[in-house]
Image (tube, rainbow, N blue to C red; front, side, top):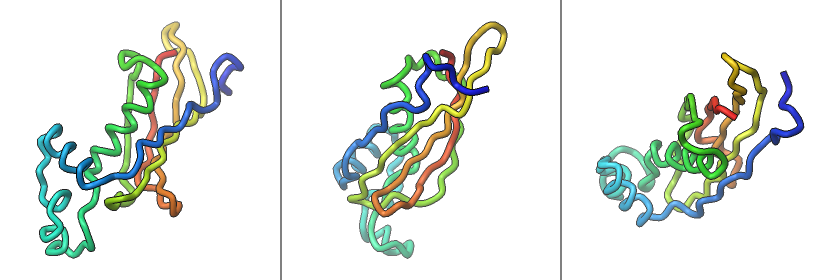
Length: 134
């Protein structure tokens, strides 16, 4: 079923800015994920990478922020994601959510959203879906 006119077809995109080395260090501290490929260039190079790159969970955290900027956290019923590419240091991700459809389940109106994180060069780094109570 299509989204009713009172429900937008998409929500405002989120542009958190460039992923800097400081961003990665702060996220490592906040998340407890101190994997050196995300914060130490020598470790990243030893793993065959040109430089450090963002934690996948950082993109998921930004997706959570995208959703909670629009709807209260208590209304997020499902969040499923799949990582499709890495986010290099200095990349500027753009996070988007589009409402695919709505339905009523047990008297509760719900929306299913398609989620995506994309870089300036067109690389999609994460795809997913969410179900929210409206």
